[in-house]
Amino acid sequence: MNKRKKIIIIAAILLVVVAFFIVSAKLQPKTAMSLTTVKGIKGDISSKITALGTVGATQKQEVFSGIQGVVEYVAEEGQQVKKGDVILKISDEELKLELEQAQSKMKQQKIELSRLIDGPRPEELEKARIKYQDAFAAYESTLDDYVRNQGLFDSGAISENDLTNVKRELDVKKNQLSIMELELNLLENPDKDEIALKQATLEEAEKSLTNIRKKLDKAVTYAEFDGIVLKQDIKQGMTVSPGNLLLSIGSPSDLQIDFGVNEYDAARIKIGQKAIITGDGFGDKIYNGEVIKIAPSASVMQTSRGNETVVKTTIKIIDPDDNIKPGFSASVEITVEEKRSVILLPLECVIEGEDGKQVMIVKDGEISEREVKTGIENELYTEITQGLNEGEEVLQNPTQNKGDI
Image (cartoon, rainbow, N blue to C red; front, side, top):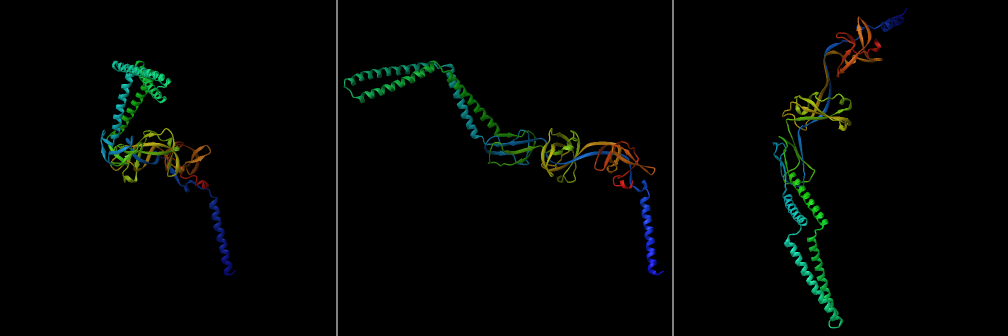
């Protein structure tokens, strides 16, 4: 047998031996000794929700311009203020002039209405009667002149132009008599419609006066509490219009964080739950917080993931200091559920079976399925409420090892 044939025969024998060991290894059943296992342990577990929000003042006063005018005084941004301090004053000189005019007008309306209701003074009535009598006498005299001149015109003694002049004078006297008669009748018998009209005019004057006084009240704004000017967008001498936000004040020692919670997590949020607060602006400082408000309905909010339906939630910062300021971004971590001294397993140990959740129990080198019930979980562990005792051994990742079981 030559050398080449010997090599071929040896190689063939080696291939057969290798194949035998491979097949034997595959046919030999696996035991628990060759798989990774963990034991159920007792420990504490908590479930948390994280969110991003903005620090703001819990107590906040926003000042809007109530009138149009020139700013005489405005508190500076960052200025400390006390309750009752003037924080904004708008020029009110024109309003004061309007107030005087409105007061004068209302006074005159009251006098005129009183005269209509009470009737004229005796001397006024007597004066009106004399004027009427004088007007009547003048009319009678002019009428006599007209009758006499009519006769002269008929006889050709005067011209038509002369008669026209007398007729014109008679018309004037007649008109004057009508005016005097009307004035006398109004004094002797006041018109109810005129009284009603005068009352309406007086009411309008009173409303105008009230509105001017309200505007004057808006010319000066006072601080509602001790705080600091958080924002100020105007300067002295600027003209402002009604409705514009001019400045806001808040209390730096009373801060909160507003944020949105998604629909799933919203059901787990409760008033009074504790939170820890961190942020880039705080350095390594960690603050404590508490949930104080949850919106009664959801709303759409712009988030890093786009438009998202969220429930607006507020956390009160329990221990604020000078390092945390309104306007800062903050990350909040809320503990929504917490349990102590319960059975725990890594999340990957629990799988979904036909009848619910289950684990793969390892005992005496044998592996068997067992149904379990779970409680709260976090990013690493899940609570086993039923079906497992402390110290019992289970497969760590039965899903990955399914083909080897």
